[in-house]
Length: 506
Ligand SMILES: [Zn+2]
Image (cartoon, rainbow, N blue to C red; front, side, top):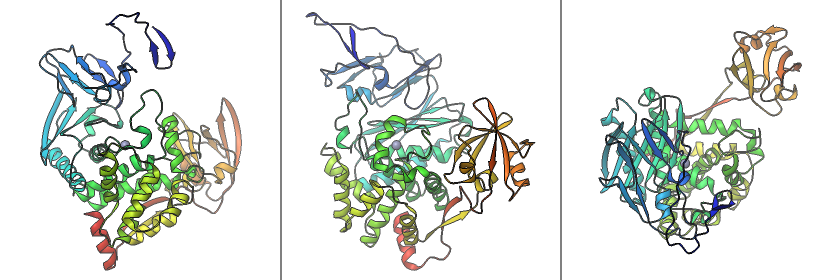
């Protein structure tokens, strides 16, 4: 065999009717999308370690696992007693991860005759009653809006890890979630568990069944670029959490904490003035999950979530609170998803306009394809629901007064982010600089205390950059940076706001 592309080999079969290929795969990474093997588990994401015959993507597969007798298999695939399974085509195989281990605990629940399975791998002390009650609530509420589920069964595969982790990947009728540390999963991480599970479940409709035209069908050989990340990730981010509120799993305070995080991320990111969310959708394939060049890009999750909130408000206002964004998704699901037809950004706009009876031209031009500031849009939507944006200066002097976020690395403080136009920026600091001293005083034990000690005075910072010690003069200005934003319920809501809020939150 010889290689013809980064992921393609040609085999000269010379008329043979059968060939056997043996290969080994390095499986040492454990996250929600990887393949991993150690003495305690075999975890496979077929899309990254099984190959397929490019000429025959529709051919059937037989998969047989050779695993210890005490191990169970958790997967959307059904294996027989010999651990064998028949799979109709490559797409089904590629989209069906599996975990085999002796430490799988599972429970199931039924909603409208659809079966949902929750499988934890290596998680101790699971409070099943609470977990099942909460999962059933958000599943029911999502199903209520669509009226049907795209498959008969669905499986949550949860990899509980002993270290900090937060990652989820959606599949045809399952999801893999990596979460940790496992000692906190039902404590401080429980809202994260619910958030990511509700998000991934919503993907069953929004990206697995209903897909952009560029992903119908998927191309396994290259990036599947589309402009519509604000729909498949943005709306999923918005509604994943909103369904936790609508189903009573979250109360309004818990919901607004999560929503405020998106508002904060958006307003803290100067990249919002340089890249549109439609363009960001392309770059998600390239550097979407790392910080990348500072001030360059935006997130389809964050920007998409906030634009979904605005669209939800516009629909509710236009229809006197009769319908919201969930109706847009239901319409798209039946017109495109069930019909197995890919959608475009224009299809989304047309569907919105038909349901709202109003034009969204300027919304798409300015905010989806453009880089206009969101503040006025958000304020309009907050007013409608009786919400308000509470702003407070950051408690960190470095953030609030100098416009830089820092993180302690050993005995030094490293610059992680710089606000454009702030003293840190105009004073010539750069991301990655190590801050050593303030006005000749070693910045220990706290940089912030030394900065505040010289409050309202210009400062000279000693920094280390690429092995050189440099001095930088940092001016003080009368302006705040990295302001904290919290969305709250307005204490005095008028009747119209209360009505809109009730429809939106229930
Ligand atoms: Zn997602």
